[in-house]
Length: 189
Image 1 (cartoon, rainbow, N blue to C red):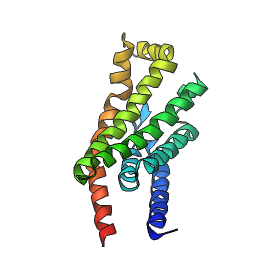
Image 2 (image 1 turned 90 degrees about the vertical axis):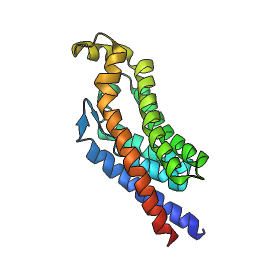
Image 3 (image 1 turned 30 degrees about the horizontal axis):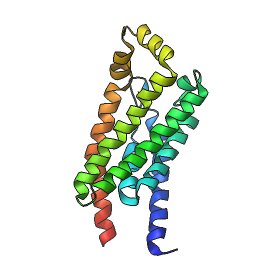
């Protein structure tokens, strides 16, 4: 094993620990009915520094913590397989796509990081929305109606994901480029 592989394994290991801690801590901070995914920041950082497969791995770890921590309990009660598929796909693909986006624009690292930081929560939330429509539509519609939403799409957009998504997007856009740049400066020395 060469020094670059050792650095990558160490870096991904540290980011994995950060993903687990942030997701567990984030489960106590809620915007609307869902926890804030502060964990998307280390996923973007890992995807930018170590590539799409590392981003996918970190997203997969995030997904496992969501499933094991009880954050997906309301959905597991409705459709176990649909919940597992949605949660695993949204986290894993968010990390993988962030890595692909970073790689595609890597000649301009700041732009690449910002675009990866945008793509990660977009993919994460987009797959969640698709999962809601595919596996949970009657349940989600009843939740929305109980809260006074006559339109299920409006409930998903404004009642379930609105503020949470905007917070995740803003925090990713602001913090991910800074962290990647600081780590990049540290590794050049």
